Length: 243
Image (cartoon, rainbow, N blue to C red; front, side):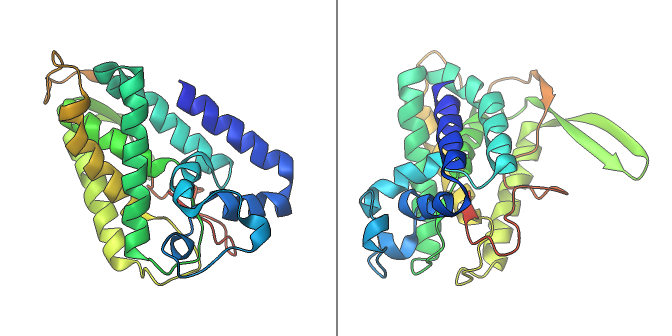
């Protein structure tokens, strides 16, 4: 998928810059809400793109290996099905619209924040929203681990993605939006998910049904934004806000 390839190439470019220049690139191409809304300005040397363009460029930047690996895995698994429902050209437009809605949702939640937001998971949230509307009864293989019990269980997508969505809302409500220390951009996930669910009826091909019957999924999946033991949440001192 071209979007995955583009994200990977941008990430490799970030790595090639080195730590210091890479951090500066995050400010240049990441979305800084305070800059977008005119509450702050970047130093002249960092003004590479207009503030409105950072809404798009931020979708292709990532904060680390786990961040991009998780996002690209979800995009590969779920994006394939959603892309098939509408075609490549429409999918790119759909993806960018969802990413834009995600970025604006987080920006409006914290309009004076000077923390740069980077990552594709807001747009991927839109893909998940679309997938839920298309395949709510699909069986999703979920990794279950409790003490010594380890197994993969099948759970309907409506439960997995529904609980994830509610979790993002709860996390967004309980996370101070004025906190400039970085963290997960929960409202970006919510905004992207809602936009994807709302747009899929208009982007899908006419012959594609909504709310399709169940079918099995061969992959273990955990929605983006889920906190893992060694997840993509920034390390202490990292002020980038992944989404």
